[in-house]
Image 1: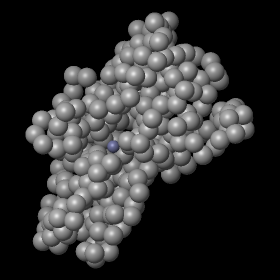
Image 2 (image 1 turned 45 degrees about the horizontal axis):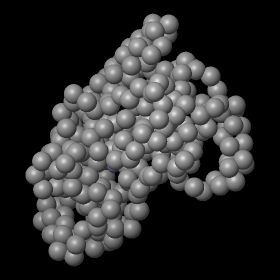
Image 3 (image 1 turned 180 degrees about the vertical axis):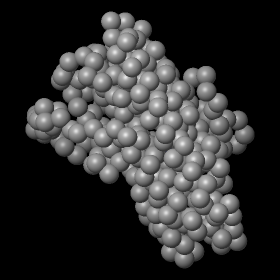
Image 4 (image 1 turned 60 degrees about the vertical axis):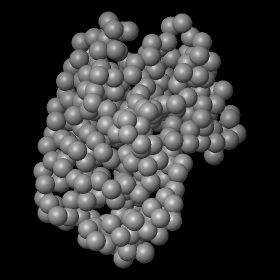
Amino acid sequence: MRYHKPLPAFLLLFLLFFLLSGCAQDPGKPAVPAQTGSGLQVVTSISPLADLIKNVGGDKVQVIALVKPGNDPHDYEPTPEDVRLVATARIFFANGAGEEPYLERLVKNAASPDLKLITLSEGLEILDKGGSGDYADTGNPHLWLDVHNAEAYVRKIRDSLSEVSPQNKDYFEERAGKYLEELDQLDKYITTEISSIPQSNRQMVVFHAAWPYFAKRYNLELKSVVKNSDSEPSAREYADLLTYITSHHVKAVFGEAGFNPKLVQQLAKDTGVTFVGNLYDDTVSPDSEANTYIKMMTLDAQNIVKALK
Ligand SMILES: [Zn+2]
């Protein structure tokens, strides 16, 4: 596994940026200003994707996630500063499938003829599309929680970076090759871990509907609490959930980093099942606990196993 140490220069610039901006609490502000460091400037929406890009791009690429680690991307709105970041970037790596509803406007406002827009989920199987759910129009965007999909993202990142920066093609290919091997290991690890949970316990009740790709790949049954972060369950839906949890002998309910845990905590209290508060899906952790994609997925698998086994 790969564990990045934060670079002192990065930290200094990060602090300097906060001092200059005078506004450390604004969730709309990007984690790093675009004008720092060297290399190909690349922007993406969320931190798990930024980590995939970093692993391929190494020191030839400078990547910025618009939504800072620890924040909920469903609430995110681009700031004028973000528009400037995108305007100076060479590639925007979007997840697609509705993850970036602001994208069209953002790219239009950035008005950069040099900006290449890559949609990482394009060509992959999108779940939850059609029907009556909240993801009926776009499909469910959380494809990266299936490690196989993350591998497809990495291959697309490798090819896009190589196209824009052909002089670094070998470098990107070598790094992507190594990282894909690590992701293969991760996929095997999660498969083994989850398969240690007795079949009848493999039921997940989670705060937001991020988990169908994970559940499908690793053989779990999924029952979400809310379908997206801007709609809470009605009294009737909440009552149905209580009944479901009790009658199916669900062992735990899960909250997620970046999301308000109140509702899931209440659900745990009302049913007497275990509450797990720190699954990572839309964001990596700002601290070293889960500050990379591999670490966040490893920790998620461990926490799921611990709670359901
Ligand atoms: Zn989400």
